[in-house]
Length: 100
Image 1 (cartoon, rainbow, N blue to C red):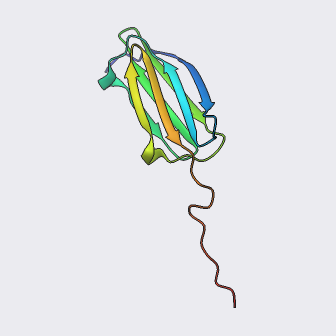
Image 2: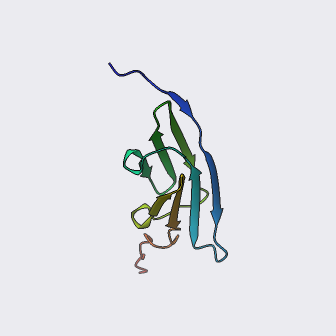
C-alpha cells in the first residue's frame, strides 16, 4: 500500500476580468510535473490535486457564479497553474414558455 502524503494548500488567487465575462484562477504549485496535475471543474466549483515527492497540493473552491467548465483553458508554467474560464450566460439554459 502506498504511503499517504501530507496535504498542503497551494496559494490561490481568483479574480474576474474587467468586463466580468471570465474568471481566472492562479495556483502556485511549484515543483509539480504538469502530467501529475489533476484538475476537475464543475459549473460552480473546482478541485485540484498536484503531488510532489514530499507532499501533495490539494484545493477545492466554489465559484461566485456559474462558469462553462468545457471552455476552460489551463496552462502550467514556472510553478504557476493558470485557469481561465468564461462565465455562463444566466439565460443560456432558459426555456421559452409558450403563452396561451
